[in-house]
Image (cartoon, rainbow, N blue to C red):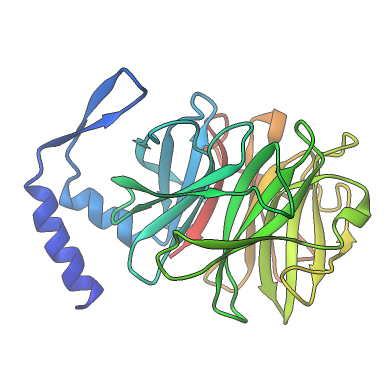
Length: 310
């Protein structure tokens, strides 16, 4: 069945829905207006989708859409409150089954991250809680899971920042989906070479370009808190840093997310950390970046999320 037919059927079905009740916490519920066919069409047809949490709440998912990757408007928020814990750092993909999936941080400390799915980016269902404890590592902190489909292998991976100390130092580890359900994962496998830099790195975002794996990650310790750039011939490394410090003029920033524009250029989005800004910067080669611009519709409101180019 074609995606167009599916959308038409789903729109008719959704039009008949009047309301649903979603839990906000253990004791409170709230009635959410039904999703109109128009809102559903906007959700699945927008070229860019952005999932994030906000400065006001770490426990609610907010979804934004954009036609140009520059101006974002709220599709729905809050749109998902997990059964327990937080929903920080939500990373979104559109899977081969036609559903959207987010991987997210469940708490400030702990040994798991979670995955939820949705057909329309409005109604979400918890699909899996994935343990990060293993014979390799028993982390105190499990942060910032980031989806990555490897173009070379076709495998779906999640890069997670793990720490065995209290809030650091962090290193990125790779989990790989065992099947298409995205409920069972192998790992963790450390991304080697990064520890040799002597700093803790979090919020690692990978990009495959020119037959190399590029990662952009926040140097967390020693007060740097800048997004740095490393490359490797394999997803798990060993990596070598090619650009460090404030090399692109982004200042202190975190939560990098990179997508590709229609003109083939890359666009990096980042949370401006303590500045409250949400910024973007463009590049044709992942090395040379334009001066950053702020996104007024997101700045001061949202925190670390991921932009999906549909």
